[in-house]
Length: 124
Image (tube, rainbow, N blue to C red; front, side, top):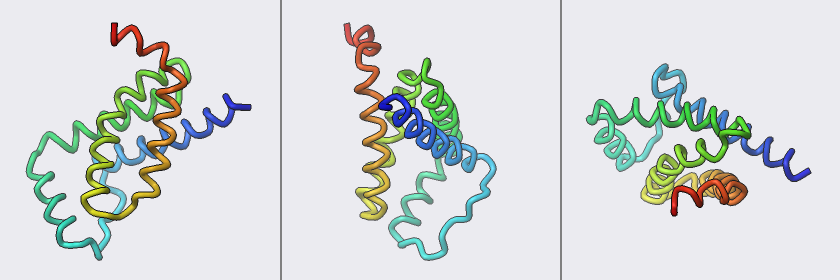
C-alpha cells in the first residue's frame, strides 16, 4: 500500500514539474495580472539572465520524468532538490503559496528518505 501511495505522490509531483518545465519553453500559462510589485521586480531580474530559465526548465522536465520512474527516482530527487530550494526561497521572500511548497517538500523528503541507501555511495 505504501508503494502505491508513494507512486501516486511521485506521479503527481513529477507531472507538476514536467508541466512547469514545459511552460518555461512554451509559455502556455499566463502570468497573473495582480502580481505584487516586488514579485514582478524579482522575476524581471531573473529573466535578465537569459540562460537561467531554460536551465531550470530542463532540470524540472528531466527531474520530473525521473521521479515518476521508480528505478530512477533517487536521481530525479537529486536533480529536483536545488530547484525546490529555489522555489522555497522565492515563496518565503514573497510570503505566498507556502502550503503548496510544503506539500512538495514533504513528497521530496519522502522520496529522499525512501532512497537513502542509494545516496550513501555519494557521501562516502
